[in-house]
Length: 188
Image (tube, rainbow, N blue to C red; front, top):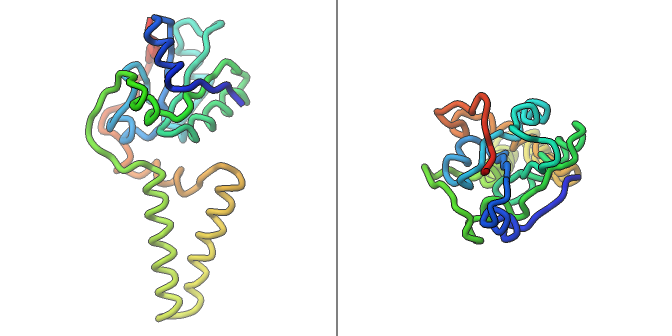
């Protein structure tokens, strides 16, 4: 697992003029809503540690900072980098929300429903629909809320979310602009 830095300490490094490279692993729609000024968007479901490392201007000896909304996807991204042989990754604890609270400069755009809220809305809807259909149509429909419940248990156990990964690919979670082809994600 990668290292962790608080949003306050991260901001202090920015203010001190330290060279900082930051990638944001949220969906493009979440990124467009609000993101740290220097962040480049690389959604977790399409994250390629080798390609990102190859595109970095000076990767040797400099850590790569990772951010998401609140920290969970950032940890998963750090794990991917470490597994790919790049241990110098640092997750910004508390994510973009903590950076906003700490006063880190951000860019604001179009409002989006956060991915974790979409997961809760879909899971709750499937449970309610399955329960209603099981009561009024046929008891076999009760398998739907049972499957959702088991999926949530699996998600909690493995710290992954298949439903979130699926929702991240939906059109409303995509931005109309393309990801940068060869980003320079540093502040120098």
